[in-house]
Amino acid sequence: MQKQSPNNRPKNLNLFTIKLPINALVSILHRASGVALFLLLPFMLSLLQQSLISATGYQAVSQMFNHAFVKLLLIACSWAFFHHFYAGIRHLLQDVHWMTTLQKSRFTGRVVLILVGLSVVLFAWSIF
Amino acid sequence: MFALLTNKYPGMRVWLSQRITAVVMAAYVVLLIIALLMLQPSDYAAWRVFAGSTVFRLATLLCFICLSVHAWVGVRDVLRDYIFNQTLRTYLQILVDLLLVAYVVWLSLILWGL
Image (cartoon, rainbow over all chains, first blue to last red):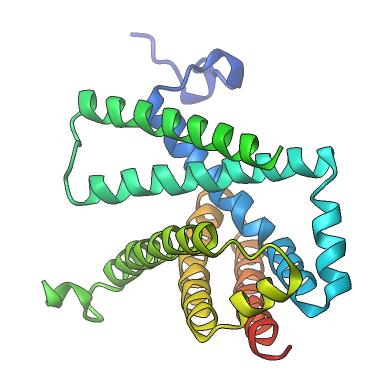
């Protein structure tokens, strides 16, 4: 009888060969966007402070937001917010046992991705 | 059900606080967007009046306190999943805790100290 030692098992660490199911995708993006939002906190607070501290500060902030590059950054940040928001609501609904079968959660996962896409496009359209 | 919130089940309290803070923040964000769309503070004076109102100050502080609790749980889970060195994880967690407290103080200074 041949016994394979655990060390000889094939490994598959190439992330590009792993295709995430939609539920896993929505979930990992929820985590990633949460970390991103946490890291963005000092910048958000700093902008709020700048915008309120004086009229010049307010001018500086609004002029900064006029740059196309800053707008693109802002759109990326809005993605983190919208994904965390919609996927979070989905998690809350799952916590109260709504739409928890595999089929249904695949559907709500798709709904989340579509809502995120629409919201980011709407946000981008409104600031450009 | 309330038995679940006693010291016997500390994880339950953490789990529930992450959910409750999520609901509070979601409500705040929706109300804030509605208020901004309705009032449209489009210059410095209007923005200061908007942000200086008691409702905005209290609601924003409440939301941010919820945010710090929520982020504390979230970052804790992430650190536990990816940082395997206990010492490093503890130090990172302390750093994050201090940052979150500092952010709440900072926000209070922004809202009331101006």
